[in-house]
Length: 118
Image (cartoon, rainbow, N blue to C red; front, side, top):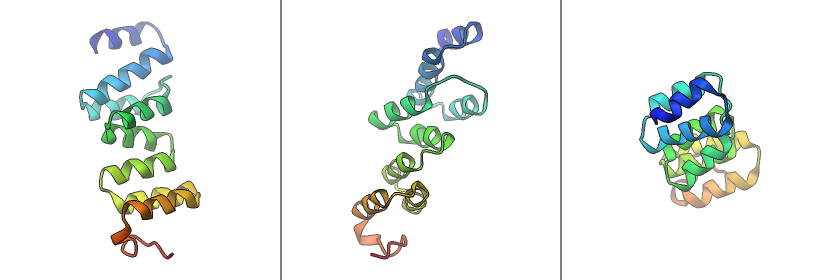
């Protein structure tokens, strides 16, 4: 990680920023990840978010998808974290019924509790 941080000081490359973000996620350095996202960067946040999701690094994926307002992907990430109400809200913000229906499949016994009216 130190090598990537050193590289980042010398050059601004999407590959360097993206790999540094993934390294923060992989090592569970969420505060560093959040700080990085608040600064100007050239990372491919969507791509890194998808990698985190695939590696089941859901907490990091949550931060990444939130930072780029990818509500649909954030909703499915929140389901994996057990944050059902936030997942439903994210699915609704996505504006796509498909995601809301998928949320119902994940939490069928609690669908009324989380505001599903079908």
